[in-house]
Image 1: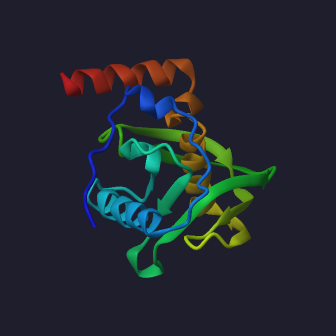
Image 2: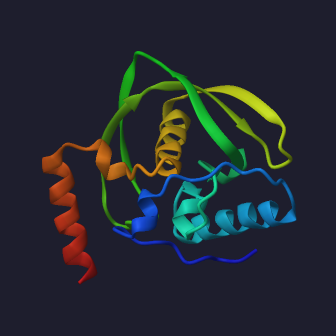
Length: 164
């Protein structure tokens, strides 16, 4: 496993729509392992291949180490609940900056596992929020875009001050 450099906001790669994974091989396994190690060091609870400049639809999530690592290849949200929840979000690409985002409380989604097998699952609460957040990133939507313009501008100014 290797820790990979993380793209920092406002890197244009963070707006890139990722391509579907078509080859399920040892290189994909290595990428997933590297993403896990990179995410743990960042630290974070979710990361996409796009965060490290690999524009493939790969997500790694580890909410609690004891619960294990979840790897989602080519995830796609099928449906969302009518109920919403607010959750503080941030990004490994913008450490130290976070704010509350409102998203659907539950999702139904499909994905492939590391071996290419298809799965369909339901997630709610924090896991559902994380899946939506990471799928957004795969679609080139950085989490700041889910905020009002006022909040977004305030956070960008804070980030720019902190990184000067």
